[in-house]
Amino acid sequence: MEPGRERPAPSLAPQGNFDITIPAPKRAPLGQDVDLLRFQVREILIEGSTVLSGNDLSALTAPLIGREASLSDIIAIAEAIEARYREEGYLLVRTVVPPQRTRNGIFRIQVVEGHIGSVSVEGLSGAEEARARGMLLPLLAERPLRNATMERALLLLNDLPGMKAVGLLKPSKEETGAADLVVTAKVAAVDVTASIDNRSSRYEGPWVANSDLGLNSLSGFGERVSLGVSSTPDGRKKKAVRLGYAQPLGVDGLLASLAFDYSMSRPGFTLSEQDARTFSSNLGGRIAYPVIRSRAHTVMAEGGLTARMANSHLSGAPVSFDRWRVADAKLSWLHSGWLSGVNSMGAGISRGLPQLGGSQKDVELLSRGGADPGFTKYTFDISRLQNLAPAWDLYVGASGQYADRTLLSGEEFALGGTTFGHGFDPSALLGDHGFGTTVSLRHDISPLAPMVRSLMAYTFYDAGLVWTHSTGGQQGLASFGGGLRSALNESLEGTLELAHRAYGADSTAGGHFARVIVALSGRF
Image 1 (cartoon, one colour):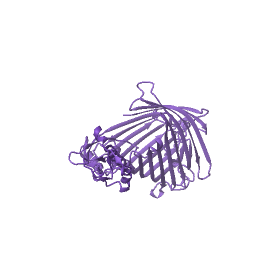
Image 2 (cartoon, helix red, strand yellow; image 1 turned 135 degrees about the vertical axis):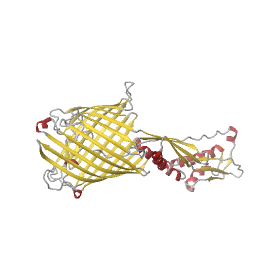
Image 3 (cartoon, one colour; image 1 turned 90 degrees about the vertical axis):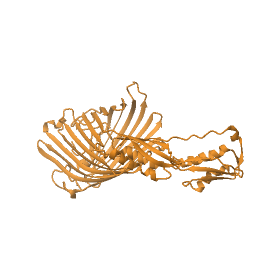
Image 4 (cartoon, one colour; image 1 turned 120 degrees about the vertical axis):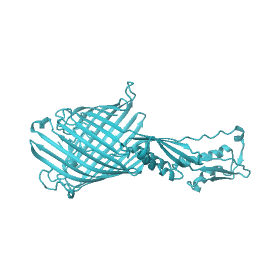
């Protein structure tokens, strides 16, 4: 029974993707007689190149200088120059060998450094269309166009709540070397998610159902309004409500959000006869900015200020009462592609601000003796998803926390539950400092039935340690197991898992060392 621990995680941009179609020009084949002609090459002139240096170009043309070559060899050099541009991130560059007369061994290759000549947006109107155009304006200014600039603009557009946008590049009819970008976009005005699982403890579950409703850009300004509720099936052990509002600011990915959640519970199991009740709430604002946004790399900087409250009562008498304010900042990095894997890293700092009101140090009824609301804590997380072979992946992850003083219960590092300690109740162990790690081997299985879209089998092992600041006491746990995770269609997913405790005590498990976990979720 730890009120105040459950609060929404920050909403970060996913790695994401977008659809862009770039028609590839086709080179006309050379006639056999033409390709048989040989020329002595004295010099190759590159015209129109402003990006590659003279040394870069010389390195590409040097193999033909002073040698006898065919027209196919000259075209191969042009294609090598175009490939070098692509390596540097310029996808719209084209190279051509123009019609020319050469009797002195001097050949010309023209480089057309492509750019965007115009942008049009289809499927949106009013403020939504204006925002989309504003986000695409950087594409018109850059000459030649870098792939990174186009990726960022289209990914940020798809990051808008409910947005799905695809792009098509077409050769411009008005300007040589230019392309017209046509973006077709639509906004899903409403989305609904629902889930139920038995991961909670016997005090507040174990079955808990969740549902969330999202309303996207109803006013046309790109905002998202969300409402969520959680409850145990009896509606008694646990009830919670969540409200959220997110608003894009400007046209470069800056996002401001407000969130509020309130939960109340009447724990059962061994506390059912003691009329135990807990209440908690969080009200805060955040701002997030994508420093880097691409398909391969995402770096997100974010920060926020949150007012939190948690209290508990036993037989009508107050047992604890915490009110505290927290400012936090975090930097996250996501990278995919290196050695066929995906890396994720994050580091954050949180600072309690008792001067903004709330509980003070050494007052009665704090959730932990000696807790100081003016704490500073540091957090980190790191993970790697590695492809081992077709249909086989290995996931390794870890996270930790260090605090400079004794924390309130709602700020402690927790072990047990979905991240570290699958075989234990959520928050089975708590500490001012903590570290957890997990490793999971995953295998994609060919679906056994037509209605099953995907099926994955997995095994896992996870473990962790926590320490208390005041005593330095240490506790740990570990669990292992496996399961099946299936997607029945685009909307429905299910998980069946067997988790076994390797070591460590669980307050509600009794003599049972294994638990069967069932989870169902849907998105509509």
